[in-house]
Image (cartoon, rainbow, N blue to C red):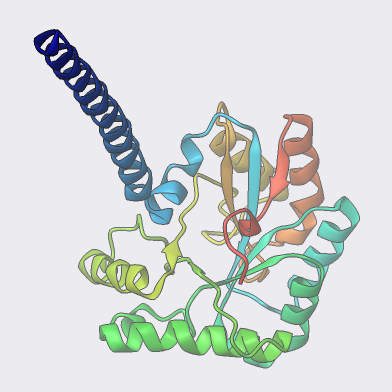
Length: 260
């Protein structure tokens, strides 16, 4: 009788131990799998998300305007965007922000994203050293902050003059991109443009360039300029917007990703 009870207790102990071990293995396995999944998610950096943005099939248009603010064009661009109820992104140059803070403040107040395009738009100066590159970013953000009454403003979004994709200063750009990453910034190029800054062309050619460069694409990052230095972009902006709307695009800006 005692032997039977003893054996029964051993069997019960073995059963409990087996259940405990199985439970532990199950929990550990799930935890490990979840850990790997989480790790994989965090490996996708914000820069990679931005780089992959134009691979999306969703018809979203990010209108971006470089090289302003200017008295000739920025106000007109803002008027049209307001009329069309569209929020865009302005890649501003620091020295022009200092000259025309009222235009930057208006753009910011009306819900447009104010991004960074360097202080001078002078490649030789910008890439003379990493310290100088970082100073241009910070000085431009400082001017934006002064203009919009937000002293600690950090734009988070930068566009290289001529674009990161351009082969000029490629080595310096790579080092600068690493510096941006350490600062918590990303850089943005484009996948659609009207070529308004390349040479003087007709308004219809500007529209045609936009149509060609956006054909059969999902998400667009569209390069335009609010300068009128070469072509009159405000003169074709309304028609450009109407074309994109008719193609089924909705308009966003980089508040989708950042809140400076």
